[in-house]
Length: 494
Ligand code: NDP
Image (cartoon, rainbow, N blue to C red):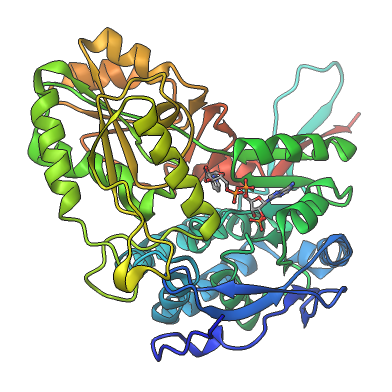
């Protein structure tokens, strides 16, 4: 494997990376390492520590010590100032962070740089919620004289397990509320995309996060991830990833009844009604599937199109898809980068094969890209028309740029098809009718519905799933409060 010597690769990327435990950068206890590849070139970037149960144990112990130490006495104002300092430092380094994310997980610079404003928003949002761990006086009807209080207390040590499709976003859902509420955290990023997390963690320590308040253990899910999910010193786990792994996280949490937050996969419907403005609906629905090369939990991969406009929609979607520029994310013209790994590429190509085999009509894409891109994990954005909701490509999460376009006759059928899935993460609606938009948005069983848009996300509004897409809300006040537990105090004043 040749090393990636591109001058665009930030200096941070070179050299072996360590874990952050108790404020110190340390090798994995086993001394083992994992090689990190640039998915656009297949070249080696660097190596990360292969943490396992022993490293997790040390990190959880450090997080526990920090939770029970000085950190507990930090005032909301001190924690807010810290979050705002992190905000400033992270934004000052955002060009570098976007580059790191692009070479590590493949997303084009247009996307990674585009997260700058969102990052500012999410950090300011959590900074503005540092008073969430508070005390309320609650009226009581007890005989005698009682003062009854409800304290919201930090749950303690929080474990975060995040996937590779957007670590630059995913880490804030753990570190943001942990710092806002006075919890401490141990984060296990995906071994395929840990570098932006490690660089941000460096910046956070530079900003003054006390030793042990945030810890990062890199490594494989089956070793480090499983150990974190099982650890009895962890009070709450936030997991983002596949439903299969989530089942094992749920089982592992039983040892000490950890609180759980699960944000899992989807097979989201994106419904295009006959009265939709196709100039908006075609690119909107297409990018609802293809963004981040389809490696997005909320991707609207089942495009349900009303029969009256089905032919025209497929034609326009196909034409639009063929204009998309796939390439190395460092090229400013690139719209879609590679998939994360050879494993993910194989998985996506297998689903594409299944689509054709089950009778869907391949209208665009379908192939791995060759030529100058042959060494990377690139696949063409792909359209299957004539798809039906019972085909494997319409039932299982592919996590690649593959759209299944399914016809429907009327709103009842659209909602029946939309809800005929084990998942319930998100959904989209394209219509010019206010009543259709309103009725359909109430009719889809999913945590987030977008009308005449797709994928926008404000941290103050938040998102979450239902059914097999998991539970727990990310963003909004509920998210912060899920890092707290209520404690009642009865003071007998008589
Ligand atoms: P996983 O669910 O296995 O990985 C998500 C995270 O969980 C990673 O950090 C992973 O670590 C970790 N993990 C893996 N096994 C365990 C375990 N036993 N206990 C605790 N943590 C664990 O997803 P994959 O990366 O394997 O992707 C497979 C498919 O899952 C994708 O094709 C996609 O369909 C779906 N997926 C959905 C996501 C979503 O946001 N909806 C996100 C990621 C995947 P590591 O990667 O280091 O092994």
